[in-house]
Length: 60
Image (cartoon, rainbow, N blue to C red; front, side, top):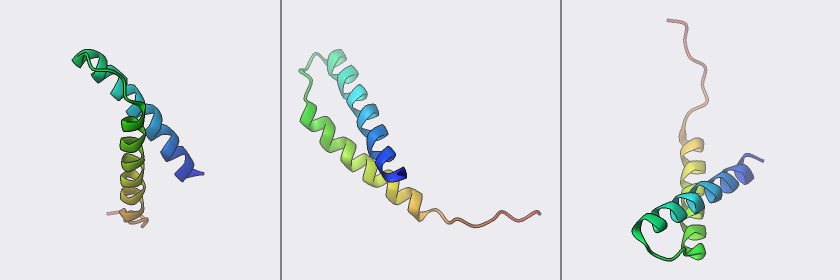
């Protein structure tokens, strides 16, 4: 479920960013580019989350 939500949130946030930056730069909205970037971002977030160790913190 966390992988699906990572893809969903990545898609929503990148699509929003793509729309806003495109509107400011006065370029047309490109849906396909946003989907590709969101897929890359979701994979990077998932890999980063898997790379962080899941150990308990000591009570020093």
